[in-house]
Amino acid sequence: MDPRLAPFPASRPRRLRQSPAIRALVQENTLSVDDLIWPVFVRDGVNEEEAVVSMPGVTRKSVDLIVKAAKEAWSLGIPAICLFPYIDPALKTEDCAGAWDPDNLSNTAIRAIKDAVPDMAVMTDVALDPYNINGHDGYVVDGEIVNDRTVEALVKMTLAQADAGADIIGPSDMMDGRIGAMRKALEDAGHSRVTIMSYAAKYASAFYGPFRDAVGASGALKGDKKTYQMNPGNSDEALRLVARDLEEGADMVMIKPGMPYLDIIRRVKDSFGAPTFAYQVSGEYAMIRAAALNGWVDGEKIMMESLLGFKRAGCDGVLTYFAPEAAKILNG
Ligand code: PBG
Image (cartoon, rainbow, N blue to C red):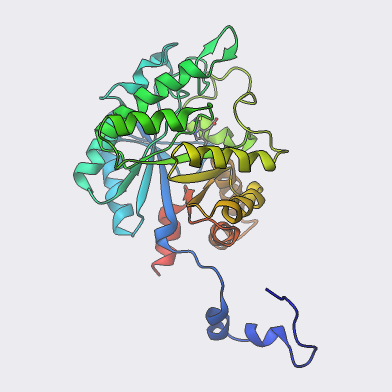
């Protein structure tokens, strides 16, 4: 594209900004409810709902209330919901066996949602952290997060989720070789329809703090995740990881966090043209919400502008805790 304009006054760029109608005609990117994936937190019990203090407006819900919320989200036009379980700290173990229990919270919620709203896509989280006594996404042996043994556990977890009816498997663990292992296991088990959205470029970020409160991992986590999640200073590495995950069989890729990494989204989309998603993570949500609750910014406008920014950067869709609120605005 030749970006040159005719000399002024033949060219007056403000002509195209003069009215809502003209601005709408020339708008390059738009946000739609079809772009939204809603992450939610599942807890045990019946008719239970408790606030996540560091994420005002977000709650942990028991399965019955998650189903109700999924129905509402589907009626707003939101195509997908993503489940994260809150596991009682007393139930966390070293072997993380709860992760592939067919009747664990997450798998119970998958079945209940697919029963009530069969056409809604259900996405899962594959990582050991909610179940791990150490709070890490992988097994910890002698202070080290071990890769290959973790991948074996993640494969079992994936198969249990697929058996429960999951549509999108979301490996957020950042172990090496997991996408290929999961894809092979899914194919071998007859789950060739089940898709994988790889957290391909997931950075070791302080923006995950409120999420770790939400899933009860903050207290358990010892140390940091820098030996498996990416260094925030790196960009080329993200392209190598996305290439690898696509080659191993990822159907869709994700960049995470979102707003501080829009440059990575653009590079990934331009390099591969694959279905590309961003996760507007808990810390991003908390910052916007906190500023809005203080009256320092217009919360609705900032929410919509931040989501449109992901589309402009090259995303096909966004995981966002704002999904229902944004959908209501988009639906007028
Ligand atoms: C862990 C996981 C994390 C998030 C999703 N899956 C946190 C982490 O890696 O510590 C973060 C989501 C958010 O902050 O909203 N497997």
